[in-house]
Image (cartoon, rainbow, N blue to C red; front, side, top):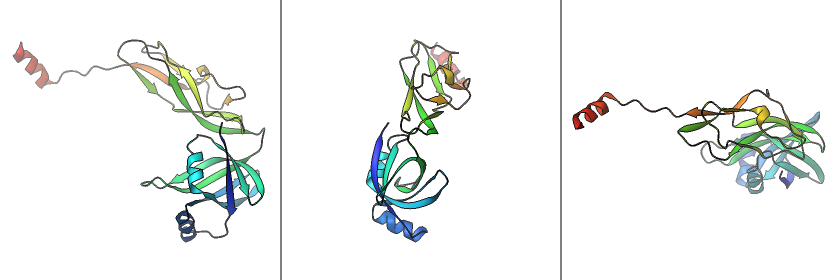
Length: 195
């Protein structure tokens, strides 16, 4: 799990105009909330935050004018066209506290030989983990699986201290037989003419 330190500044200006000014300075407006405390409006360095958010469920150590807070991203708003960060909501956490997050499901290995397709019914799993030990992803082996096989949430090995929040019988992956396309009338006529 990645732990990234960022220097934050509190902000007193709000609204679209203030947010645009902040983004022009290559900073990102954000809000930190949680544990019943009043929300704190801050600005974060844009480039460093963009790099940090490449890691799923990154743990951020925020230095808010001398006070240190641990936080995880709760909601990230990006510009739909250019992709730059517009706003970030951060949830404060404490060491040892359990949080509910989504982790990506990765596969390893090859399906059995043949015309099989792997369907990702769920691309993420909702799990509960300690805030300072959130897994970036979970990996499951699909080696040798054939059509009709499926992998449920309970079949995916989780890191120590991580528990499932979703139904353990929920299907995460399933193997399907590839469907052969039926020849169109034109193709059948062409084949008959060639014969």
